[in-house]
Image (cartoon, rainbow, N blue to C red):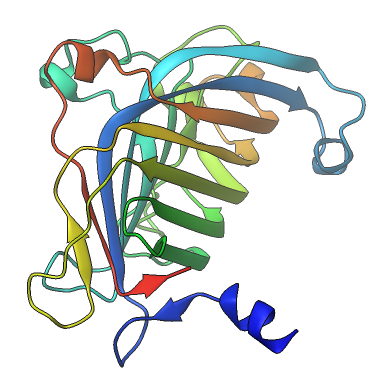
Length: 245
């Protein structure tokens, strides 16, 4: 019994804290958004103002770093890939837009990045809360979400706070190697497929478009469809970790 329990744990390959990075803009997502008037209704899934509005296919991007300063400082971002081809792409619009850009990793609570034992599959997971939009008092995390069901406005109509969120990405078909012999396995090759999810509760805080205000429950499903990849506007994947699971 003890052997089977230990086999399921995430084990650092080298001494020191768990460290990892995950950078990809080669996946897509779709899903649903439901809108509620109160947080309690959003948490309990009742009395929806709008229920399960379909999120059309969009390109996504993840940039997550923990304890790997040789790659970059700690960072935590999940967002629409609106910037490919200098913004000239079908993703650069409010509809289906999502953004949580925690550039100092201040709102995450639990984050992991690890390989399978063959170093062919990489998984990254993160949870957090209170990811806000910048204000004079708070540098914020540029938190935005499509104001589904409301009249479309400027980007300001989509600003607010992710009261809670979590996401998971699984990238397959990789070939992790340990070039420095220190137990930190890395891959700069592109994955063969992507899966996972992003979900959370978002409070819209638009001041110019009060019809957008409310509590949005977002459930996105990650897939391998990407306009940027198809049109050769996506950068290369980068994954690395000193942990296997």
